[in-house]
Image 1 (tube, helix red, strand yellow):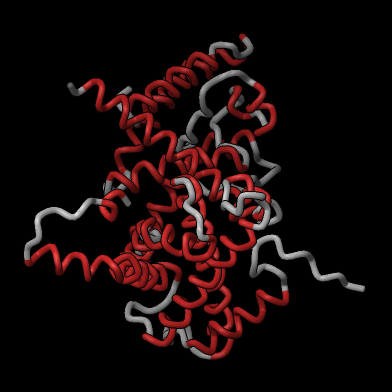
Image 2: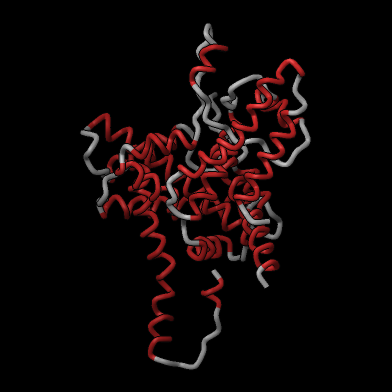
Length: 120
Length: 227
């Protein structure tokens, strides 16, 4: 997110707190979203902490594997979109989800642009 | 463009225009397509207004549903074409499915009982009777991994930055993966203990092992040679 890349402004008490929090903040949020997913996919309202820990580890391991395997397809060792298409070609669920998300991203971008130009 | 409402009007107008290409024999029925079109637009207001995000996603899912199977239609209009034929026609998007009147359907399809494809509106109507399930569904739709965390993970793994599209794609893949894993684990749990029991790490590990055997675990691992 762009918020993470803001340059440091004049020092103040609040800034220091934010700097320390932002190091763990994305992963705190990650865990919260994972807890929401556990409930959303069918678990009880208050899942066990051990379950959450385990699935957090599994998710992190999965994303890391996707990055590592996808990176090996590129000579410059970068994870590209083509690598993702290649990796998910045999898994129709994931492939369709990726295509849907990218299509929606384009539509949202277009809608935002139209909104901005018409509302000046 | 004004967003979804203008889009709906556009597709409805296009649908109405398409219906004018029908056979003259269908003329008396073709008139009612306009009614159907306006009724469809009104029906959409019944959808629960959960949040703007969900509305856009619902629309997206509706269009997705259309492409999957036959759309339930009242009568023989061009919309009855199979998905392949429909894609051949030039046009921006497919028309949305309308709620069909049951009497008309029975008149025409008496010998054959058609399987109704899932329609988003009907699913939501059904969900409204179970508020807990609706809450669960809403949570499931809203949950998404934070892009900053995923970008950080990818950078840690590759040592290189990646584009925003890649981050979005990986977030979607991870959510689907987590969903598959949790579903498998829930199936295992249901077969062992009661449905209302909480999910234990043991179930997750068993599900993980099962998925590993079926090769669904990692992307693009070479298939295990059966020989």
